[in-house]
Image (cartoon, rainbow, N blue to C red):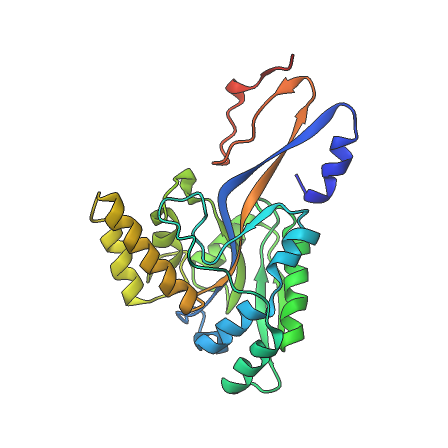
Length: 268
């Protein structure tokens, strides 16, 4: 349910909201790989500027009602392999402007931004508008285009036609492991990946080639350092799911987005 409807439900007297962190992680994907053609975002300085332009914490607090957990990369804090030592970018508009100037855009730049339907990500339209406004303050002027039908949107992404930047989130197939997002969303030549880095690909394969938890933790920590240092995408937050539940029912919010109605029971 949308975050702005929580108070309505909670004050209804007949229902309440329950929330939980979930695996789904939100991002703006950037076409670093050039699948949609050449773009300024193939320059790391421009990608870094996009990350530094945004006030993610402010959007989480004021637009999402706190329903998000800031992430430094795409790896969710609940996933095996998450490295808490890598800290999220913080907003620095002046540095973002300097990076754009160094990259050859002293007056900023215009770019196409593809939006999808707000189906799995709460408050998507509102948060995107807020972040696009942040971009503009640094000179990154987004021209938004909406595809309102989910199948058409996903097809556009899979076919490599999403453009230089687009909104995206990933639910990990409900598997609490870093590989469940790294392989599909960041490995070279995968349908949902607009990023390509051989060093990262080698680490992804290494993580799939051992069962040793310590080795896998080290591998994924290195992978996250690459993603962060390269500003692979615009990193947003791990989502918090919101459920509306009747006051006559006892139900705990699931962390994997899988509703198990068979565990719902009458409330005492």
